[in-house]
Length: 125
Image: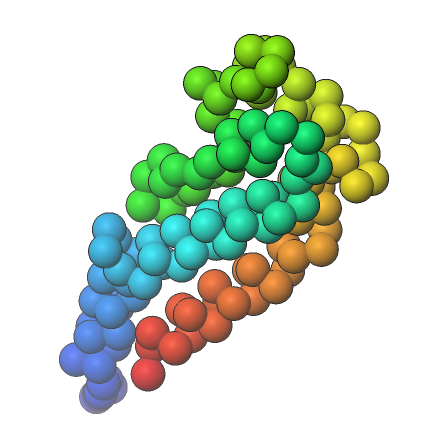
């Protein structure tokens, strides 16, 4: 006869992981934290002339497991009235110090992901 023990513990662990993945769980909180950390990084690295490009950077959670950082389509340069979404990608394409998104990814991306991973590890005793 084969005897299997620990099924209750396995089921409890599966429930904890499932709960962590659903809205309000640890994974959505970690994704939201990563999204906001990326937004802070992009804003900190954005060149400033009028401040419209930096102010136009925003983020949103598209669903419980997907966040995005982007330029608000309604943001406009106060002097030229040109939408920031028109010149923001041009600024990013200039590269170097102008590439706020790429620099955030390169300079801070791994640290953001590592901290989110630590958040998840701490959630599971």
